[in-house]
Length: 329
Ligand code: A3P
Image (tube, protein in one colour):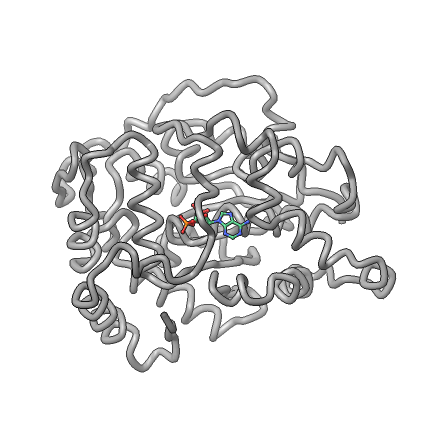
């Protein structure tokens, strides 16, 4: 298997014209919605989505054209998406780009320029860009499993999630770094407790992928950010096995699993010129730098009172009860 090819290498010219699909406007206007910090959020199929994302998910559901060998990465926002994109790209692409390659795409591009975000591409009417990517494609979505089109059912899916309190803290910093400096953490926290944060409820997001990964582990790999932090090299091996390209004894002897983990570590990525400068995103421009903040577990202690932590822990625990899915924090 050769590839995947970095999205940015196929679409070198910036063409960020936004032509949202108009045909769903009537349905969308009937969906329950509310406004928070100037942004409208709508409930579509049980999931709270930022307004601009709704037509994108609808178009994804109706128009997505799968290709043999597609791999879909999925995650709640701020749960290690950037890291998973880098690791998966490096693992899948290692025949074409060995981890020691000075010109490796991950050394000259931000991981989000390597792996496209389907939700926004469909929202912007730019999904034809996906058709131009050669197979095997590596694609990403924040959609819940219940929202994915049946055409994705044959793809392998890798899902990464994160302890919810840390995910929220990361989301808050990200929103602030994107310009909303007057958005208090308490506002996001309340939304999350009610299941109304972007792509929430968190617990439904988790449980959807969790139950398919338990029923069909050969199709959905369920990763936890905190476990990846403890042993990134094992995660690299796990990804390679799941994707059907386990490391050969020659690659093991050459130290490739550790080399890939090192290349994709937050310190290595953060230090690259490609990640210190530039920005990404169609609807909101996010600086590449903003995707690499702390990258640790347990940062919530500096943002939440013990009472807030107890409250959200209790909600999440109750929602996940009986599923076998737990988080230690
Ligand atoms: P923090 O804000 O807690 O530091 P996403 O990629 O889904 O947007 O998630 C961003 C979070 O992942 C941020 O968390 C970021 O620092 C962390 N992150 C990004 N790259 C990482 C890497 N290579 N290793 C570990 N964490 C990483």
